[in-house]
Image (tube, rainbow, N blue to C red):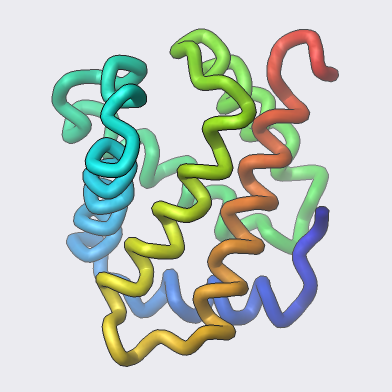
Length: 140
């Protein structure tokens, strides 16, 4: 799966509208939604997500900044593949995370988000998930 120009434009515009505080809150909201819907995943992550929030946000920012530079994404996907694999995150779990990102966007933006924006957001996080899964150790 790849992102088209409409996906890239839409998600970058949405992400750039967030303040730093909104981005931090968004990251924590995604995990709150994930753990509410799938409590079994909570054991795979640190007890206090605030400890890893900045690292998550740094990765998302990096990926957002390089959406149109696939070669620049690969090292980050490889790093994230190792981390997720070591934490016990199975490839099939990413589908749940993609849904949580879309729900979080709807909650954060409320009436200001269109159906198209949500679809672009889903494409983005499915693209990220695919890149991370392909980079799991043994998959390269």
